[in-house]
Length: 396
Image (cartoon, helix red, strand yellow):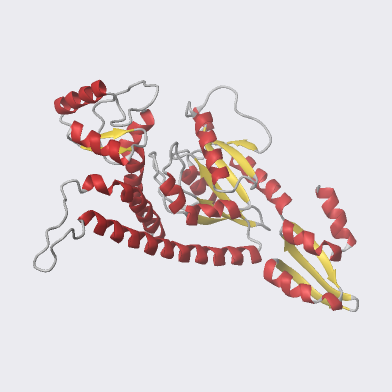
């Protein structure tokens, strides 16, 4: 309920009262029991409230009944989060994704919004059942949803092209993921000397931001900040934001940022990990980054692929960069290959899918020094010079 309060305040509302009810199952008609609904109505009238927000997702019929009984606008958790996203979207892509999620959320709830409409009465030549405004709006929204999906498909196509270009240039992508307000944007600013807005509020970052991060003199990576996750994130949003969130699936490494100062950090981390699985990125290597360690007392979490930092002060960032380098070192291989001239066709594939550092034409074949992704290394390993194979065994 404290999280719901924070969401309401993020949306621009002010919480004047909180009501709880324990029931074995929700009431099919009004979600709450009749007595609790009456209690809420009296509380709303006494406090002069404008709307009631429910932490659970309400069915369209429950929302309609509650609005009639309480006499105020009713929002469920999904509707509230969608409203916040609509306020925060800045880029064209972000606005498209939020608009699609809103229409998908709105479509089954139309009947409650048009309860005052009956069959239209036609003029001469149009008498009969006619078409309801509800049916007209349903068709209109259906067309809008189709159009938005087409535009987002184009966004995905552009992202796929950009992704292939990054892969060819062998630029690894490191994606920041985490619960909303865990400190992802602050960490991005800290590591890349950027000035992205990073405020202490939920869903402060909605549009994906990517910056170049220099790990050392030899290696650079793209560090990408993503939208924060939250408990009961509306499935419409997850679906609409797949054009953005699928970047997680194709990232070389995930940094799961966890707010260690939050007493519920374990539950929040579990929510994020479940969404990572839902998005198909569970096979991507992941480092757990425990943030805000400067605000914690006692023993800090330890373990493999675990780093404790303070993005605000910079404490622990050197260890984090070292962990990133170590993890990416497992994902890429620098090798020297010798292609026989009768297999020169593989050279085109390497130029397309690898980063070529050096090419020399020798008597016995084409010698190539390149940075390879693991899946590509498996296809050209037979051409590796002996010293490349030895180096690989030493790394393993």
